[in-house]
Amino acid sequence: MNLSFYISFIFCFNLFAQTKDELNKKAGEEFLKTHFFENGRGMMISPDLVKFVTAFEKFGTKEIKEKVFQDRYGFNLHNNDVVGFYDVKYKHLRVGVLGCTACHSGKAAGVFVPGLGNKTIDPYKIGKDAYLIQKVWGITGRSQDFKRLHKIAMHFAKVSSDKKVSNQTRGLVPDATIQTFFYKDIGLDYPDLPNGEVKVPALWGLQEKRKTGIFASGEFNGDSVGWEFGAELFASDSADHFRTVLPKLEHVVENIFYNFLPPKYPFKVKSLEAEKGRKIFQNDCLQCHGDHIREPLGYPVFKKPKFIKWSRVQTDRDRLSGMQSFMEIVEQSSVSDLLKLNYRDHTGYIAPQLWGIWSRFPYLHNGSVPTLYHLLLKPEKRPKVFSMFHAGEKYRFDENHLGLTLPKNLSYALSKAKRGDRNYYFTQRIGHSNQGHYFEFMDKYSEQDRLDLIEYLKTL
Image (tube, rainbow, N blue to C red; front, top):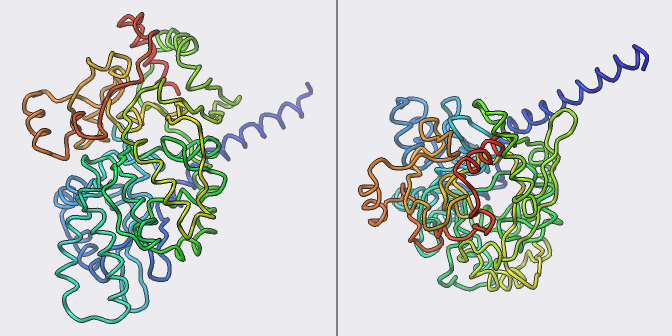
């Protein structure tokens, strides 16, 4: 190889690396500015209320902002801004708009990551407070534009705060709220629905994941980008809005989501233990989660994940129990042409690739297991209660077990959880079971085997 060719090769190699990192950075920056408010439609609070919110943001102390936006509602604060909340002008009004990043950006071990699921967001609490405040706010006479937007905002708050369809624990988001759109679309009141609560998924690798299906159980076909708009549907309450913003949605999916990279583990990894763990992974975990290979420069190669029958994985079924009726109501809707479905002979869950898995705790689709260590134990040995408060902060991160620290006072935590405290994950709530995902080969694991496997998973 002559010198000029070698220099050119090295230059292109480095340029490729810079481009990937730069695209990831730019994707994150653009994502933090993204919302789908359009022509007075979208996820919003009642018009002009935002004046008080932004004034509070500007002049309130950091401690008060943390108490309200972060601690009470679960928003992330990044550079002292509330992530995913925007002050948007519409005609003569100012509108407080919620964007994708309110849920789809989060923290792990104190590291803020665009595209990581928000571990602390509480749609129910946000909706409940918004409904009460807006109900008073909307009493006085206003313009027709105000009344139209106020009606949409009230619907958003009302559904979010309906205990029949909303989340029971912070950090989870319910599929049931999305279903309410389809009932309204065909002119029916929505019935009691399985909440179908899931943790907010990470967005890297979405290009390949779509090939198996969108969301945890894979019934929603990813051939078009429509299902990525799911959370917005019930909020904007408008099929026309959905069709209007499709070009923007396609841009967001293909130019932002596709460029996300998983965050690197921010602490030291024990290389010898990690190599032992890699061999365990190759023997036991690869058959479901697939191999994890990297490009020459170290970037992950994303692959289509596998769909696993429920009879094999046996994790919580609540997400699956209402899926047949969900699919039927989607087919009757006015947007069935945009929201395609996957029909399979068996129900089950997608076994995701594990890139960035260190940051994606708590584990399983419903976030019912606080650490990877506990996921490797028999279900009866997994914690029944743990705290989701400040789940993304560094002081809540367990480096050894990879996930959330556990309550020091278990009896106190259990008492709070039984009384419905939303900060505590309680596995006896409907849809919160921590059963399943335990296989015969795990019986042979020693304590060191578990720790070695965890050390390897830190490297993904």
